[in-house]
Image (cartoon, rainbow, N blue to C red):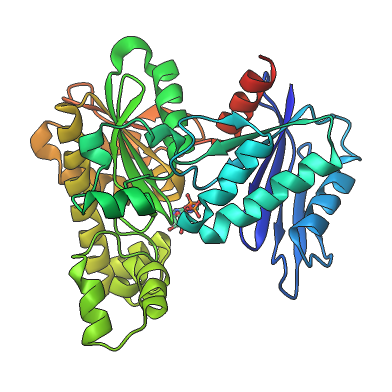
Length: 390
Ligand code: ADP
């Protein structure tokens, strides 16, 4: 079955056409700067190089029209469409075939992720209208976390306020964490029961997964919580918000921008939000870059231990996403701070670069540590195939 996976953002739309059975990717690309001057589509198909198509993309509908026009030249036909949805809110414990009700719910929970959900719902609607014969499936990034224990997702705020505004821990990166469980299980066999998934990209979160079920995760009501990220501060004392407002005179929108876009590794290093630049800076003796690394290692190790606590044990830890898959320095830095758990990293294995799952811990390490490249598109396509073939 060939599935078109669509990942719509407020000003971008990524797509990938892949075969669920062979995992072959026939075409993929990204419509960038939708609604902004200078829009273009970066497209790649059947192993050929990247093309840059400069086209006007005033809205998502035009972007989708272009994507389907491009895909007409690809011999493989689309059998179903999968849509990544950032926020499933209080409705979706799993992926769902789209109907009017599902679409209305994606819009109803949109205030929890306004930059994403509205655009995603619009794109789902455009696809349904354009190809009524094709099934559409939504795959919410929060679904995997939906059934974590109540003591993990509930906030100690007044119940009536939480109930009215649907305030709770929703988490994110659920599709990636679910894929990591699946791929690690396939790779290691029955040896894995209690796994910490470390999704470290420009956005970063951890997930405690016990026998395939999420026990806790580090992102909260929104993806601002938890780890220090490229430009996000992660967990800080919530009173920092009142203090910035009352004493600093910042508006709520300014604080929102500060915490989401001007903080994290970028703020501490005063150099870059990209871990590669920060590693280079630290190697050249830049103290702020070194502090950014030290804080990243410390917080990531600390929250990893929190995930271990939520499972009352651990046998496997898996690094994934941009930093997790590519930076041996960051992996070593985090794991060094967890050596007290009996973790031993093999430097030679850690230095290997590969697109395949691999173990980087020593044979006598108390916990297996792996690198497993994530593949959210494939996970989404699997859900589409499963739901549409029912
Ligand atoms: P997201 O999907 O959240 O935008 P990614 O998972 O693509 O993020 O991670 C991107 C980040 O990974 C970069 O900002 C960079 O800090 C880090 N990174 C480190 N090494 C590499 C590498 N070799 N290639 C790509 N990203 C890398």
